[in-house]
Image (cartoon, rainbow, N blue to C red; front, top):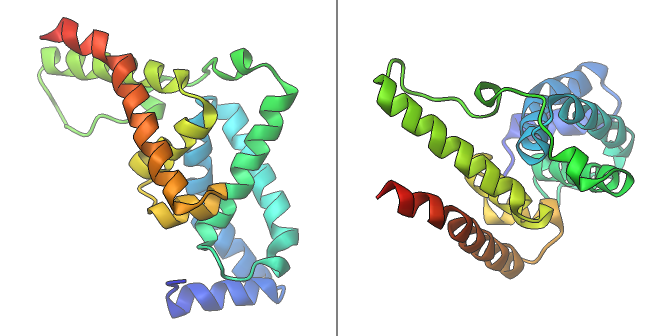
Amino acid sequence: MDYTDEQYELIVAAQAGDESAIARLVDLHAPDVYSFLLHLCRNRTLAEDLAQETFLRALPALQKYEFRAPFRAWLFRIAINLLRDDRRRTSVRKLLGSDISDDDYLHITSPDPPHDELAEREERRRELLQALEKLPLALRSAIVMRDLEEMSYLEISEALGWRLGTVKSRLFRARQELAALLRPYWEDQE
């Protein structure tokens, strides 16, 4: 794995029980884990709970971490397994409900776009989010990891436990399904 000396030493120190190293690892990775979960479930409370549970599961298992996968991918795998477990316990319909505002989910980067441009961006984003929610969890996970979290194919492979070819084919399929879901909307815009 490609670790900087600092990252490697931090993980090794945390494995040895260094409380400041453990705290630093949590501080470094908690925002990414939360963001990843939020993109998948779009429920702030659930994402917070699952992110916290991810670290409650990861820290005792830290001794078993063997540097085979990137640390971030290892955490994401724990997070997605927790989300799957939660989905098994509750209805998928309940999980797709959102208690966050759209501004919390994806931010518009332009400082002061014209009102009509802002409205158009907002509508496109809303359509994209609705289409994304319609994808199965496995396909949505792959898209979120690649396109929103900017993870490499290898990191996604490690996080989801899929072969590299499976990652690529599922991303291809996810993008096709997403395009098909968005096609009616985009045709109306032309």
